[in-house]
Structure formats: structure tokens, C-alpha cells
Amino acid sequence: MSFRPVIYWFACSALAVIAVGAAEPGLVNPDVFNLANLDASSVKPVPEPSRALLLFAGIMAMAFTYRKAWLNWKRGI
Image (cartoon, rainbow, N blue to C red; front, side, top):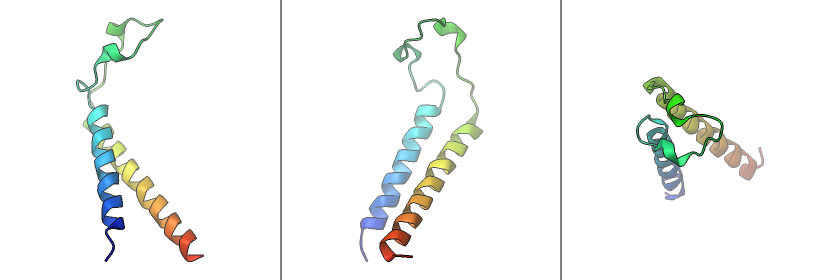
């Protein structure tokens, strides 16, 4: 058994977890973004855990689709 699929799914899962962590309010410092026309206090993150779960599911679905397309292309299907 090759470790390439295991490493691929581990990397995709880690990327999805990092993206979900960055999407959660409070983990990103609002001072990082330089908004010229907006007051920083007027832009507040909305705490919705369902968005984070949808982001995770979307990243994993894209990873599955990419892997499937890659395998089909390599097999010549």
C-alpha cells in the first residue's frame, strides 16, 4: 500500500481544519485587514458554527472531486 493517498487525505483534512479555525470569530485579529473606508468597529464577525462546518465539508468535497478526477485522468478513463 502506498502512503500517497494517506498523506493526501491527511493534508486535505489539516488544511480544512486550519481554514475552519481561521473562519471562526475571535481567532483572526481584525487589525490585520486594512479597511480604508470602513471603521473597524462596524465590521463584526458573525458567530455561526454551521458556516465553519460547511467550509470543512466544502474543502473535503473539493479534495474528493480532485482526487477522483486525477485518478480517472491517470487511468485514461
